[in-house]
Image (cartoon, rainbow, N blue to C red; front, side, top):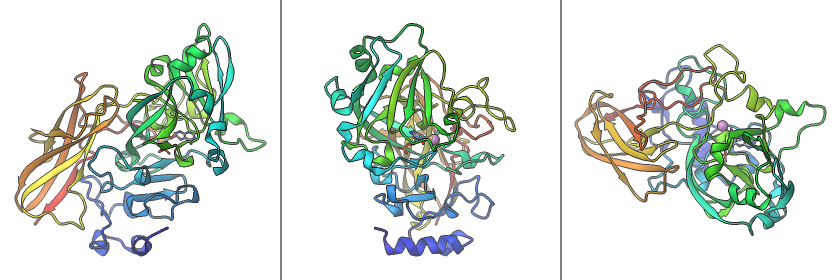
Amino acid sequence: MEHKTNIIRRRLLASAGGAVAWAGLGAPALADSTEPASQSNPGPVSASKPLPGYAEWKDADSMIVHSANTIETRRTAFGSGGITPLDRLFVRNNVTPPAAAIVKDPDAWQVQVDGVAKPRSFTVAELKTLGLQSVAMVLQCSGNGRSYFPHKPSGTQWTVGAAGCVVFTGVPVKAVLEATGGMADGMEYMTGTGGEEIPAGLDPNTVMVERSVPLSGIEDALLAWEINGEPIPLAHGGPLRMIVPGYTGVNNVKYVKKLAFTKDQSPASIQQNSYRMSPVGVKGTPEHDSVWEMPPKSWINNPYDPAQPVKAGKVTINGVAMGGMSEAEKIEVSVNGGKDWQKAEFIGPDLGKYAWRVFALTVDLPAGEHQLASRVTNDDGETQPEERVENNRGYINNSWRDHMITVKVA
Ligand SMILES: Nc1nc2c(c(=O)[nH]1)N[C@H]1C(S)=C(S)[C@@H](COP(=O)(O)O)O[C@H]1N2
Ligand SMILES: [Mo]
């Protein structure tokens, strides 16, 4: 399935030290202001492995394969239509995904619903009779932007591409609640359990992907069987996925086999210790804030590709902007490293508060080096900050400065 040029490029990437070596082959070199290609954390430059079998249908040229379970979209590959094509959407698995057999007959997949008046299990076919809703939303890994943290947190060195904007379709969780007699008394969280097999002899809490979100997350939550109009493929959590719009990737549990309303958060380590905003050098515990809702964030995707030199004169800058928990309302662009800002336009359809919007601004750029940055403000009046919130594992980086790019204009 791979293109020959891509294989060649990978070899080059593996051996080359600088951006010059592959200019002309179409691969983006790293142009982020904070991360010159010569540094020890070269991001996309070092990452170029073959696609794993379960995701071999991805467009290899569009992806940075960090590992079999961590595959990022290249900054040049988002397109400008607003919706991320499935074959370019990032993939993140915390553990080995289940066998592909589970998506052969999606309607037969079963999910147990607990913590309600009448607990029971549903097949996907049964869920399809209870209601239908679609949501366009940003799916973004909590660690997207991790590579820009100066303390070099452990974990995948994502740049901007552990994110995409997709449309999920399924049944509202509220309709499932109605069909099961409503929530049992005293529940405070919605907890979804992933369908991965737990290897025998292991304490399930150490490996299980089980996430709890506060009840406020239920409002727009779905049990989804479609993504961008097709059955959810295994890589993205088919046959059934718990969707909590506005919340980071990990809270959208793939291959969901149990949906429970619970008094407490899941005892799984992925809930108790991981995805916690602990200070640098301190391990996450339940005392630290959980990574749930996403803040406003934007970045520029074009011009970026060094294989396509930018000519002096008119240049159309474009990128994506998300509001987090409310709509992206205003987007500003700076062409001088954040000293001055000018308003850019949102283009294309408005797909609701959880989607990102493509923005564009046409400017005159003279020859020389320019630092391009973007900054979004959401409907709640919250503006994307200049600085990241420091935390041990490098979660939720929405700093505009970290996402700034340097462009050479000739
Ligand atoms: N069951 C299950 N759900 C999961 C995960 C997982 O490993 N297992 N990974 C989570 C994380 S960390 C992210 S970022 C998203 C990634 O979604 P994607 O692979 O569809 O892009 O899925 C989340 N849901
Ligand atoms: Mo993630």
